[in-house]
Amino acid sequence: MRKGISSLLWLLLVITLSVIVLWKLEKFEERREQQGEYEKPTANVLLVGYEGEHFPGSANSGSYLTIGCNDLLVPYAMPSLSNRVQSVLTALSTFDPPEGLHNPLLEKGVSFKGFEEGDRGKLIVLLEGQPTFGGVCDTPRFKKMIEENVKLYTAKFEIRLNGSESAYRCLGDMSGRCK
Image (cartoon, rainbow, N blue to C red; front, side):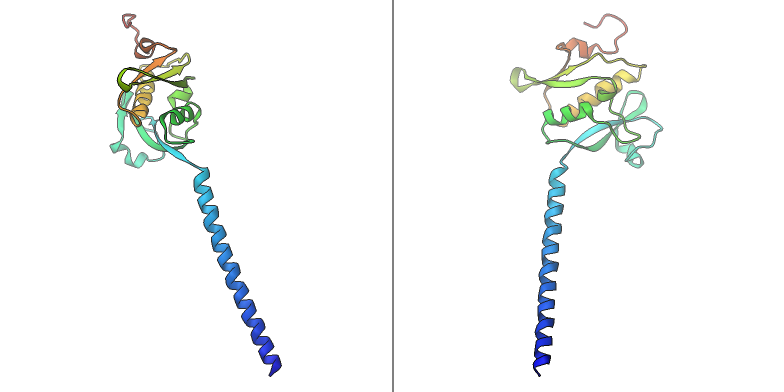
């Protein structure tokens, strides 16, 4: 009889310990998932998908904004420290997109340098660099991608390149009349 009670007690102990271990494993997994989500914040941006190329989301390409030479602006969740426009543009300056998508800001060697506040809350986006364009499609692609990404975060803005609004506005002008 004593041996039967001892075996039963051991069995109950093993079952209890198993339940505790499984419960602890479940809690550990929950914490790990929460930490994983926290370590990988993202922000929504628009990247360029060239006409005729396959890219993530190309099956839905009919709903994307068409820009220079029938290319598309494609929504993408890019790693970023936060969803604030400054963090997003800083990250976008150095973001190497997945295959099939393009980031003209990075490709053309232009970087985001900061903001100024203009009249009536207008955000002045400061870019720096000497972009080189390779054709008539390049400049509108570059400008529209930047402008649409800023529009995701604010409605009133101006973009300056190397401190000048006209330097940005006149990008791609070959007439020489843009001032």
